[in-house]
Image (cartoon, rainbow, N blue to C red):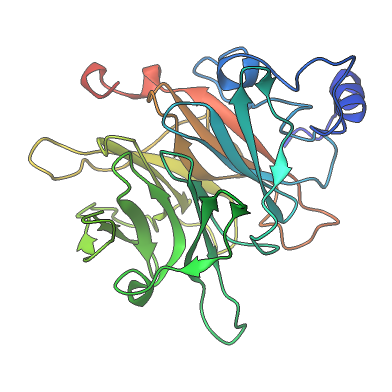
Length: 301
């Protein structure tokens, strides 16, 4: 990862307090996607100096917008934050206090009223899926989402489709979906993706479930080493295409993971890091985004 930090970004981040202090009464940000210039087919950092702190050893991931594009939830240095678009512009990112430190994957529901995350309150037990609900008094305390999702081992990353169905990996790379029916998730269904030697993790599902992006350790690489993002398309008959590497405009010699698809399916957000955030003195990560037009057949856009 290029660790050079542009001075202009640092000055912006310092003056703005990375999203906490307005400048001369101006809003934190204005316009769709926090007023950022859309990317092309080569991935670039999302909202540097606003969302992404460009200094070394800072960590932001994975980044997801609500269905209407007016809420954005992300992970920063161990905590979960949300920013919302109002008549006065985007609010400064605010920490969701009820979500504990150092959770796993984080997702925002389409209506922006639920934040899902992976966590374990008991170190002797494996991680499981939880949620916090938006209430009139703020965000609720975490609630564990029980069986059948919890018993399926949803700790390898997940994402939420436009109909609130939850897509996740169970164990090492076994893709699953829990359809949302009657305000709950009554069953877990296998997703038949033929991955070959790939170890699929953390599926990022499109809002309409027409395609999915996941990460895998590169074939032949050791566990815990660099990862790439792979794309698989859902065919009309419900089967999935053979995953393909998304290529050098997205993947690098570092770690790409945590894909999230924008509500309009135009962009993908993901994490690029030089480690797994296990050492705060050395690991650095930023949220990237990229236009998907070049990577999707026309009928999937």
